[in-house]
Amino acid sequence: MMVVDKLDPGKPFALVLTGDGPDERRVLVGLAPSFDDGKQLFFPPPQGRTGFTALNALREYAKPELMRLGRLAVLFLIDKEHFRTDELAGELEAQLRARGMRIVEMDELSSAAFYIKAMLGKKELDIYVAVLGHERRIEENIAELLGEMGYPTEPDKRRIRAKLREAGARRLEDLVRRACEGSMGAVEKAFSSLIETLRELGKALKP
Image (cartoon, rainbow, N blue to C red; front, side, top):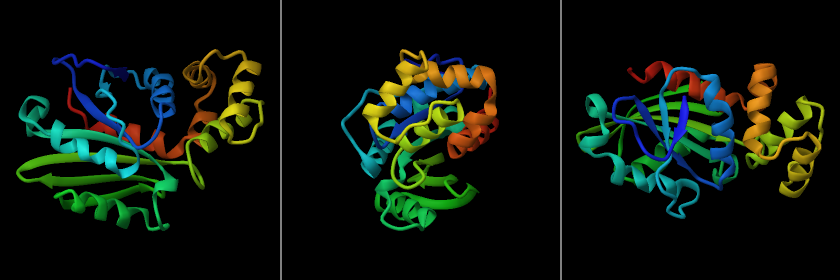
């Protein structure tokens, strides 16, 4: 897989929507090469939407020229802090219905990873959701990865930046890439919901 800002029309892709800041993209840039299948993770231009409001972009991008084989694959990444309860599946379903979608199927891939087949009018959407953060946000996953690699820290942006320097990583994506090249075990433990979602998404995207 590869993270792209511009689509190669000859390759399958998933539209990536995130409910938070740039760290999700950085983690994906580091992870994507480990899924060596040539599929694209397409980040549209940022629109300043946070939390579930990022889903509003589905109406904009669910258009025929982007829907290979009549359907659109979507990867939605969102921090746990945006959920009001522990009923993640129910809240996801309610948020999609509030945006005019009909839920056809929902599968729980893990406790924080989901596949949702939804219809927006006559348009079919395959939505893969990874909920990040054990309690609140993605910094918890990043701190766990650093700990697994021998650089324990708190899930705080400033402390994480200091530990990245200590680990000799200029950027977060460099650390994730290094972890993937060493042993996927640490990455799978720290980002279990995201790894599970990417695997299912990779199997579903048609070449």
